[in-house]
Length: 440
Image 1: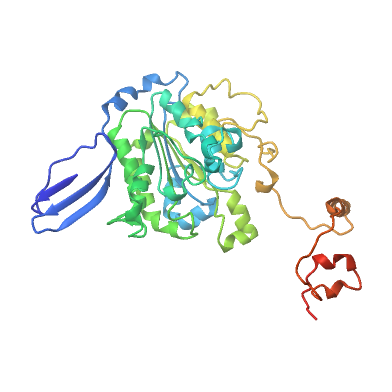
Image 2 (image 1 turned 90 degrees about the horizontal axis):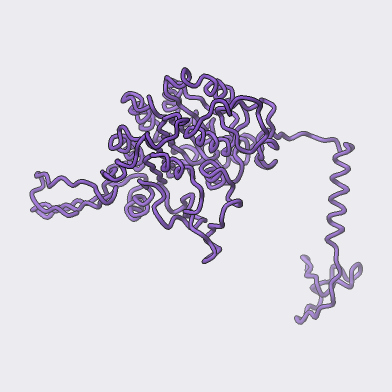
C-alpha cells in the first residue's frame, strides 16, 4: 500500500481483509519516505460466522485458551528474569507446575507431544532431509484442529522462522495451519530484522507478538478462541536477555486481566525446556533446569466453584510429575470434560489430564520419561567393591572384547622407513599400521 501526499495529512483508512499484514510505503511532497510492516487481525466475516459456542459439546468447559510460550526458560529462570510477570501471575492465582518434566531434546520434542499427544517418531515423517519422502506437518493431529471443529477461531505464531519448531529441521506447513498465523509476518520481515536488533523500526518485536494477541481478543470479543504464540528471540540463545520483556509482559498480563478477558479464558504461560547451552548447562543445576521448564495455568475466578474436583486435582498436581503428554490430555478435556469419567483410580498411562489427580508416587517410568531426561534421578557415589561396580566393569570388558576382530593384510604403499620404530621390538606385525608420535 503506497500513499503520496502532505506529510501531515492522514491517508485513507485501510481495512485488513485478505491478510493480517501489510507493507506500508508513504511518500511526502518533499520526498521524505517512510515504510514499515503493519500487523493486525483481519476482519473475516466468514470466520466470525463459523465461530460459535453452539458448536462445542455439552461437556465443554466453555473456555477460551490463550497460550504464551517462551523458549528455553526453566521455572527458576522465569522467576529470576521475569519477576514482575511472575508476581502478576501469582496475584491472579496462577497454578505453577513444579514437577513438569520434559520428554525429549529441544522445542519439537516439547511442543509436538503437547499439541498432538504423540512423539515425532510416532507421527508421519516430516524431516526435511527425507526429501520427497517427507510429508508436510499438516498431517499432524494438532489439538487446534479439534478446537476449530468445536467452533473456535484459532491462532498460532512464532517469531524466529529461521529456526522455527516446524521449519528448521522439519518440512513446515503446506497450508496455513490456523485461521491466523503470525509466523508468516516474521518470515517476510526477516530482511528488516537484520537491520535493527530486536526491533522492527521503532517497535520491539516481542511487542508485535503481544499486540497481535490483544487484537485477536478485540476482533473476536464473543467468539471461542484458541491462541498460541511462542517467543524465542530473546531467550533461545541467551540466559538473561529475556529480562528486557518483563515490564511489557507484565503489562500484557494486566491488560487481559483488567479488561475481563480472563473471566472466560484459560491462560497458559509456559516454556518448552530450560536453557540447553551456555556455561550454566555444564553444572548440575543447569542439567536440572533444562529438564524443568516453566509451566503455569490461570483459571477464571468461577472455575473452582463450577468444577471443584477438577480444580482440586489440578492444584494437587502442581507438585506432581507431569509431562507434555499430560498437557495435551488437559487441553482435550477443556473441549469435553466428563466429571464422571474423571472420577476413580489413576491409571498408569502416558497421557493423564491434570484435571485428574496424579499420585505423588508417579515415576518417570510411569510417565514414559526416558532415564536421560528424568530430573528425579540423582548421582550416587558407589564403592569400587559394590556389586553394581563389578557388574558394570564385567559388562564393559565383555563389550570391548566383543569389539575385537581380525583384519586381513594390507599394502602400505608409502616408504614408511622408521615411522613405526616404536613398536619394532614389541608388535612387529603392526608396523604397516603404525605412525609413532616420536620419530627417531
